[in-house]
Length: 419
Image (cartoon, rainbow, N blue to C red; front, side, top):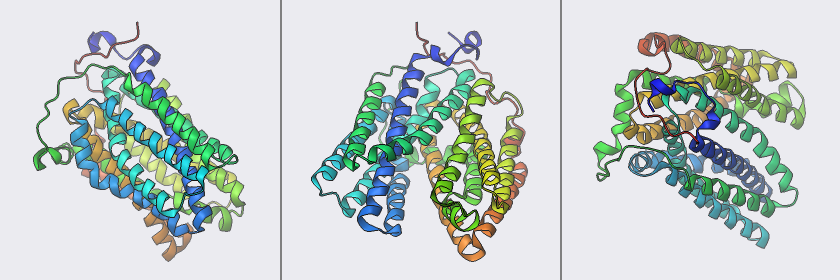
């Protein structure tokens, strides 16, 4: 069936492989969130060191950066669903090891830091493989709705996962890790049985030319480069997650319960927007909507930085999450549809590095500017910087700004629906 015949109508539930993958990602994301809650809590319980908590995040990012090019090369030459399943299988082993260590009383700082390196290496392959797989499971006109629906599920897991992990942790770290192992195993089993149509890929040996092909492609395709770099600089400058404890304690004076509300607010806004976009996808003026969403993100961070009311701060953060979700869906759709299938793994690997860098370096940037200007000054300056980035990208990447239809109308094969 061609795209012309399939159009973008019909339910996403009609695409069996996509829904199977969606459930797998939901379970895997919830397990990952639970795992990180347990590792963070256990590390702080063992060492009482904020530095060690920072090392957990850093040691997960470093392998992802180092392995990105190799991961992209592998993903473009092998079954992507099997790669995701293998990554989930490794996380089953990690969770089982932590469960045994916790139950036996021999879990320590070095083990948790070593596990962090393993998790970072695994996710260097898992994240781009997941990104590259989705376009193979639905036809191109359906992809914006599919990505929005996927984002809704992931946001739900991001909200529920930490809460569930914290609740289970009351019964002990071993119980949490055992639950993670079960969820990872369930997700991996689903991925093993995903079947989808794809062109036969050549498996030439890895060379610098093939490893760097994704980087070269992104540089040449200005729409893709503009979309990826816009997210990098917007989140790098405008993110305030690392400063939320300071705002909760010193500015809003609401304590730990208020911090929980502040951390949940962006995800709630993102979830609501992703549900809306899955029902009413962006069809026209996608470039202007993307840049406008980044501008709204910057304005919402300005409001948050200047707010002295918990409810206004939560509203601003919810709006920032909703605006960021618009940006995520449009950017992800553009990147996937502008990239040939044979290149999606390598381009997704580059995209994953940009996303990781924006989050990790953004936290560092927030902390550094807060040390110089105070938390309010840091957030306000970041919001202004995000607005400046949106204005600059309007001029630097006119092809992105002038992009109208999000989905290009070109024929391709339609993935098989459920009978």
